[in-house]
Image 1: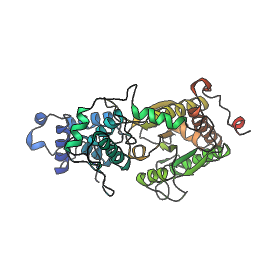
Image 2: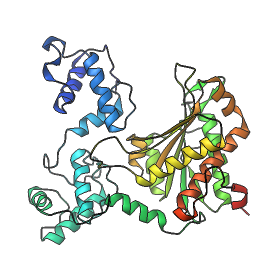
Image 3: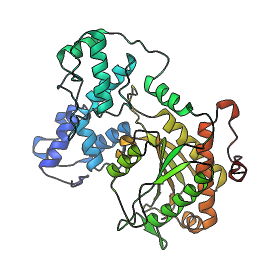
Image 4: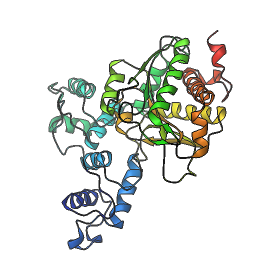
Length: 378
């Protein structure tokens, strides 16, 4: 779809403004009626606030990701009949609320991602059986009333976080036998960002192969989402990881902006800044933090820390997923670093060290920068 930003005008902008008004982000009388089709400063401010809350890129631009989030945000539990549809699943805040409520009652709908998939249908069906309703997997008025009448039975933190933690601990601290999917961004005709005679697609593919080799030496089954000359979209990358039954998903990217002073690395995990927290990945957050710390400890990149995001790729993967932005090609210093094979080796070892630390019990954790990849392969 076309993207809309400050200064644009037209019926699509009027629709965006209407969505923001329904969400309480924009006052209906904030702009004169004849200017409702103008993307004015108030609209820009409202969009940025919405993006920040939802874990989206905060740029004031309504592109596919932000428009999708605006559309999903207005649904409340009970607004519509919910059921599993193979071709066009129901997606929205009402589904996320349903998933969270099922988890609180001890039923597992999978990740609270706001997508009514097979796992959510199975959880609704099991709930219906337990309360004596017809087990058809559909959230209708009767099932909704039953959900509202029952109290929370699972306590002690987010049920989805605990379930993800339990899956992490299965198999112990050893990496051998684990399955990890690495996702070098872009590819094929999409070179990503480019500057200082370097292309993002080439560098992250090289970095992915370095990580793959090190993980393979530790007994990890590792898959890449693309070859050197292909560029699957985000949905295809997530689908591949899900089909491989991956335990972790690590996406690799670089950045570039108009300001050459911007530099450093940052790591992202599935989540948002919404309160109360209804979706996210605790293990993804932990892996993101470990990668961020290891990169900072093993290189001289500025540490941009970790941030929750609800990007499509992080949302659709069914396992803990992170995205590492390993520097700015628009920054002369970062570009020199990223052009160096030795520096890419350091980045690869940082990622592998973080993966190993993720599986270690807390009392066996190793300080940042002290995991020896060479010793692990002996």
